[in-house]
Image (cartoon, rainbow, N blue to C red; front, side):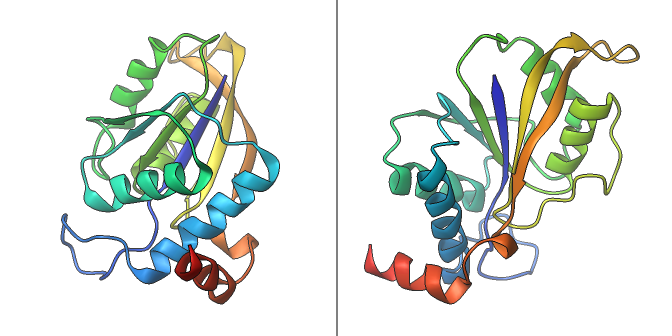
Length: 177
């Protein structure tokens, strides 16, 4: 099973506002990410869990639309920036290992802390700091962490907008679709 951790794309303003939507730049970032996924078929979750904030939902919606996915999209508690990653990690324990892939669309620092908890068994700030519209994919392994008892995961890959074609190229793609 693969677990895709996706940070929401760039929003309209840096001011603290829970309702702020994606910016044109953010939509272009999602276009770049979707083009990467379309090129390798690596993003095929059965469900996408997203935070209640609009920029997270819009990132998930744009990915689904651009990739032509037919997936279950669920607003999920425990994905806000200040939420405890342990609570979500425990919820993931009930998701069957042999089930289809899952994607989480959320925020920093929560996603980075969750990733370190799943990979290392304890949260560590800064180990996985996802840039906006970045995706970190983890793979479930057949063991658990001794200390936490949580399912163990390993890093499969990481992709970030900075590693993909320019924002100008992606903006042109976004504006033509």
